[in-house]
Amino acid sequence: MAFEDYQTKDSLVIVYTGEGKGKTSASLGLMARALGSRKKVAFIQFIKYWGVGEHVFIRDIMSLYQDQLFFYKGGKGFYKAKDLSERHISDQQHLKAAKETLKQALECATSGKYDIVICDEINNALHDGLISLDDFEKLIKTRNLSTSLCLTGRNYPNELLKYADIATNMTKLKHHFDNKFLANQGIDY
Image (cartoon, rainbow, N blue to C red; front, top):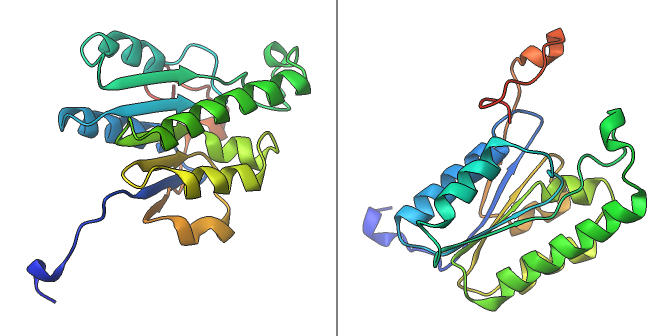
């Protein structure tokens, strides 16, 4: 097939999943590419509420891309955390935060205002039962036809793979955490 026989799509569903590192980093790269192409981006973050490098980065570039970039941080941390510092957050608080974050994602995805809506860690929220499979599927199916959707996090459901145009499984080959080394700021978070 010749190159001129190929077509373009108005929007895509992009999935970054798997046990390996790099899902959020890939979505941030997608955000940078889109902003550099003068696209409008909504970056909606589930799960993460603690200070991570991407929060500082996004905060710092918001003034440069004020008409192009919307950021919403809606997470309450890891659900059913083993870390004592996150155990004080109740199931109800986690569920409420996930529901509010999903509402933001739906508004952004259906509004037609954004070229790309990135839902970082949404796959984890689904897997942990913080959002329903029906609501997750609704987000994919009801998005504006000109809005691309990027869904990140572990455990993307195989039964919804049919909706993805691009799906990447980040596979861990080796990670220093397995040898009891903590995450490095600026690299792991």
